Picture 1: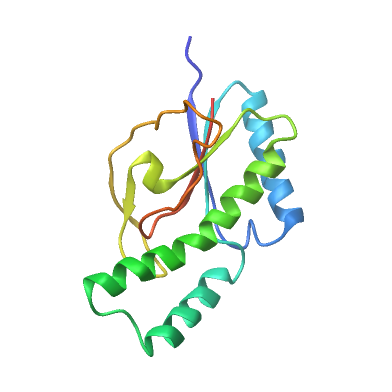
Picture 2: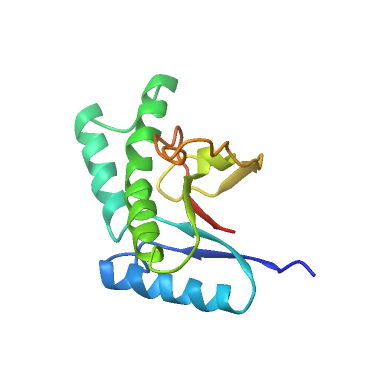
Length: 149
């Protein structure tokens, strides 16, 4: 019998500190111990997205308006989630089999803006042939994803 798949989403407050990230890792471990397969989605820590938006607005002297500006805006905002991904995976390393992936790496695309929501998904698992798999840029306004096998 195949274990059920659970998706757990944690917003910025839930991953806003190392202690909170460790608590998330414990919650995920509890779910895994129940025999479930888990996908964990994490947002940027605390107020990080707001800080990145402010930084982007200072650089652009306003909000993005062109496709090129939107692309770079997306790249900037995705860095906050990438930090959470790496921190969460580090905390989960204390006993959980997991692989950190950005949403772009698993085919999830979201709408634009700081309140982005799911737009489409094209699920796939990237090749894991090298230890570097799972590293790199997000390539779009995407939420961080983690998969536990």
